[in-house]
Image 1 (cartoon, rainbow, N blue to C red):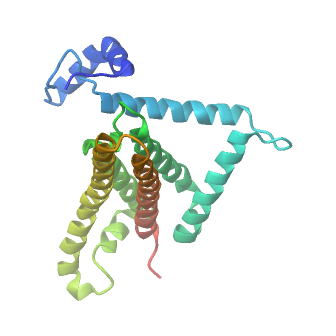
Image 2: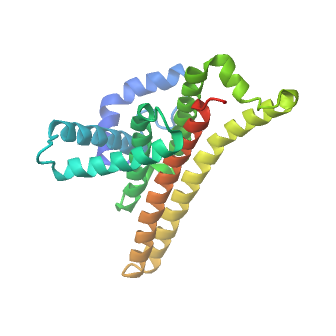
Length: 244
């Protein structure tokens, strides 16, 4: 599908050559080599840049005596997510808070962008939730190996009873891999369905009634971002906890 957003056209004009070369290295051939960057990925890049700019502005305007509105919002988000992370992970939760917060804000922003006419929520495209799920999977397993060591983390998959470890190990491996599917499908299916319902009712009832579904879309966006974040925290907690 040809790109429709100005930012997509701009990025393709500048980066289409390097992106095509990168795709060629991994054996992938885009449908449109002249415009390999789609609207979905362009919006993702815009969200990341906007988040970086937002936090940079907040960082430069920090004030103890007179905190601004943005600082107060960031502190509220930080304390809320920090409290949730501490409650689940416990001691040492601080090192994970930045990743967890970024996951929440990125998913939430991408979800809410679907409310803007002409822009599809990136999370409506299955590749985006899958990419987030893979990032989360790699992140918590990395810290599992780092925290417990290779042998200790492998033993984590075998359960507490040694004589049935041969059965539990493959089950645990399958269970962990299933988390990729669970994280991906839960986010993608809810956002796809939410966008579809909103679009259908807008086409049938262009006034008044769709407002209810827009509010529902906002609610679903917030809930799905929170669930994705919460599952990330839970998986981290399970990966770094030590047996006593």
